[in-house]
Amino acid sequence: MENLQVSLSQRTVLVPTDVVRAVLGVDTEAVVEKVDAGELMWVFNVSAKSNIRELRFWVRELQSPECGRLSSEEAVQRILGDRRQRWCGTQIQQLLMISRPSVMRWHRAGDLPGEKVGRTFWTTRTALEQFLTSRLCHKEPETGLIGDYAPF
Image 1 (tube, rainbow, N blue to C red):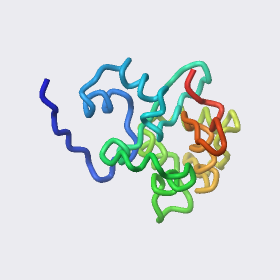
Image 2: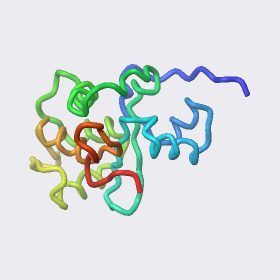
Image 3: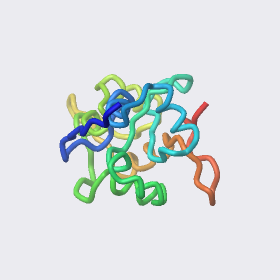
Image 4: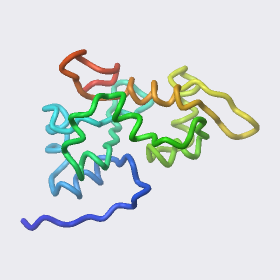
């Protein structure tokens, strides 16, 4: 089978499993095996339910596998970029490719602290960093398992 060259927008940061399947030219089972084997490090389970996997993958790792050598703090910093100190719900939805109800479920469950101003949800960069770190699906050699949402 011929490898396809897939172009993604520079603004795309995290993508769902279907995009990874297309980029790598494999099926869902092969993607999950790569996650479980630690071949893909920067994977986040963004499911609102702990018994379901709703994975998001850092595009940069798909393009540059050496990103796997970063610490979780460095990776999360690069994923979020340098500019924003506050994030609104719409920005979080775009970053994680998720729905507004998911953001509000996390907020109501206490997983993503923040506040509603009018109809807009706002959170701090620190809260979003902590949320992403808690949702990592890999092990770091020095510290062991990261997050409550590790692979099953």
